[in-house]
Image 1 (tube, rainbow, N blue to C red):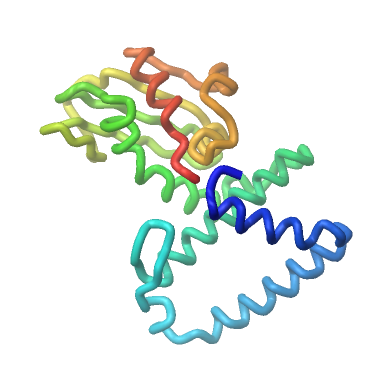
Image 2: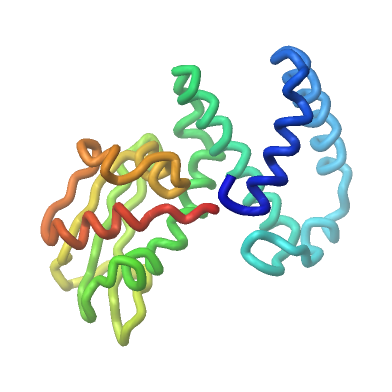
Length: 199
């Protein structure tokens, strides 16, 4: 455990240690049915109402999208643990990749310190495919649609590697053979090493 949220989560796990896997799965399925019923009947105002979220105050719909990402990430944790890959190109996988992509400008500009005027490209090759072009201008990095400037670095990996790095499930050193870097290798390695965005 690294923080109070981790401690809170551990209490939830610890309280179920005496249960069998089947009992925990039964509880999970019951909660899913109850929550789906609630969301299906909830008024629009429930989803637009402001709520406290891990990223500050935001509409409940944003909070729920974060929770969908959390659930999918933990599903992937379980799948890796039991060596049963799956659901890696689903809508939840896309939602999760897209939520985590949002912090790439901060990673490239602030953490990895890409130089002023530079362009960096991150290619995610699949199952979820994305190409993110990030330019540093006036000291700030931002996603741009395209750029005429040749990239100083191109970093390429599949979406499973991106998720593992961005959620702190593995380090860039552990996954280095699955990361392709063209151009400024030192910058690319700093980016890959700074991708962990989740507490």
